[in-house]
Picture 1 (cartoon, rainbow, N blue to C red):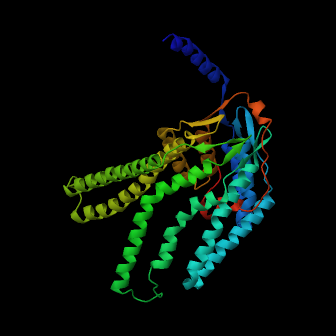
Picture 2: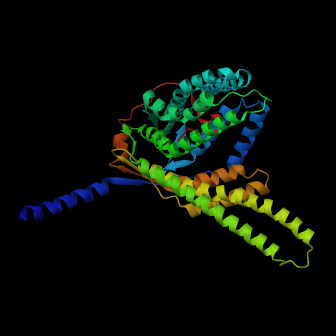
Picture 3: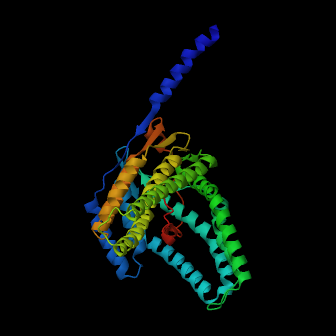
Length: 402
């Protein structure tokens, strides 16, 4: 007992020293909607005029604006990418996409070959995109890097292509304009249903693999992060999001049923039967449209807030710990206002909405480092070379960046 009593103050003192050595770096976003609007409108016009060829230059300007206005511990992030290198990557990915579309539409019997080629190249492009983005990002003059290997990229990404490959290999071929036989229709239904159900069940597992690879490859000043979040928590989040969507749908359906009940009971007795039927015919599609909008309006902010917290609260390295306290109510409120103003302004509020959302998400994050930052920044590893693949980050509407 005497030894334990002597040792306890020593442990407490060590914990106090460790806590004192840890530094909390605040994260702030200083961008404004009016500033970003000028960048956005120029990007949009030049992208349309050049038939999307200006897209990589627009992407570089957009990333630079948001990173230069993100302050970590009072110092902004930098972005140093050469837009011309991004342009070459964009042309490569564009060529691959056009080639896949052409083969799928004009040589459908060879679609599986085009898909196979796409499967072979895409994980490598995705990894190159992460490498390019991070090694052109800096903080306090030190570049970040991505250390995920090529094997991990293939193991993480390839399962996402299996449903498309299954459709190509197992769906029966039907000539355009030809009536589908009952046996062919039954087989198609079985294949589609089986693949959709299996893929839906595996989406949380696949997402966990991708994020574990992505968040396990970030490197800064010899500090490599890892994601300590179990796959079960991804399943829990997806199930809860599905429950929220179902609840919103049920509440909306109940309200529609209540309106129809009121009309059927003749609460509007001064209306003729034909007028009530016309009113019902108007109310039903409008109500269903409102439900259709309400489900993503509620479920998307719920998933977005919980997903950010899930990822960044589990991302850490030996000396760096991330955190996130993004709340659903805050994100829902911002999303609701953004949607309304985007509709009212016919889309012109979009850049303001992006800035508001970015500020909310970034300032909900926290960062703590152990020891003096300048000391371990001095031994930072500089990232290597490579240019292709950055365009894969925006291809098909997917942002594969940080």
